[in-house]
Length: 229
Length: 286
Image: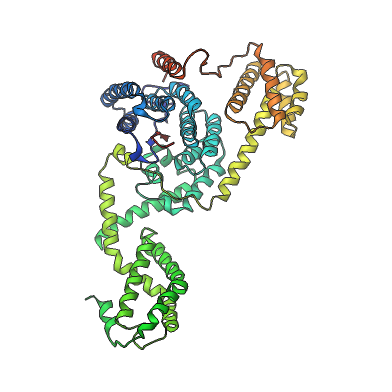
């Protein structure tokens, strides 16, 4: 499948967002890599070539430093180094390479959480390459490793939708609707609703996601209304 | 002194102090649940569930404590027994919840506003850097789990179907299907379709390659397959190993190298290649 330098595949948005389940447990370099990846994805969306060049070079330096310190003394450096480099490659738009490297990371994934992260990232990247069937398979592996992961469920909903399993995709967002505690400004779900363009685009197709957005918008509107009272 | 407090203090009388202990025991066992339900309802209808139920209940606890201490109207002004007082509180739980909402709404909405301004002024990168998972289990997920289970079963069945239908020797396809347990009507239809003259050989090869790749992934990653399927896949792998079908399922071997060295070789190899170009990052936790 053809992919241009802006990370767009046949007009489809192929950038993504990077989240961490516990942001403050990341090491300084990991946090910097995450921020760079998100900035780079956003720059691809805006087609901002200057930022893309700058962040690419910063990312290379960060990854070299991460390798030199053996993943900043990560308990499983073999997995962490491959996982971080795959994140960076994905943000640079080299999704094929990111998939291959994440598959390498997967070989060293020794805990359910690491497996979930690797499988979930693989699903996301396959989806961005337009391989929905493969994305669904990786999603099923990821959800098997951690049934509670919100990012995995959202990636799964996208994969299922693209693979033609519309009802199952909607069931995921219906479950979120039934769990209002997941819907807070600092939650992963809130971050996806605010920042992920693909999720926003999907709400025209899935009624439960549309209801979720309506609730999210009304919650945000409440906060500004409160000030006027 | 606000309006409510003035109303409570009017017409004060005295409840027997020795009954206070009994009152609080009854309050915990009989009044707590109705109050929580009333607060939940008030929070849902008035703040779209943004106001914390625990905050509202705590506000009511403190107000009831004040009323009891001052023997104040409308609950304790006429020296009721502990049971009578509890009955009054339960009966007027929704009023107390509304008072709690009124008492807390200003600070609550101010806090929401501050948070919205704070998050609204951030870039997408900053916004994402402060996102983290919520420390609660996902509830009411039976429908979702059942949808995923049925999907998993159907995909496994499709894998078997593709494995059998793309078997290199046309004569053996039905036998392989039987061994793998791909005995549904649609499996039979697929085998007939693929074996027919009109089916593109290239498509069959792709199907074989993908099915084999997936089988390899399952064998590498999982150990939960039925023995017969593992045996079938193993047979298939041996059968295909001598064919010319293209398949690139291995990302690299580790023979004779340490894991770190392998990783470096793989990494440098991937980076140096000139190929066409909601993730999660890891962290320290296992």
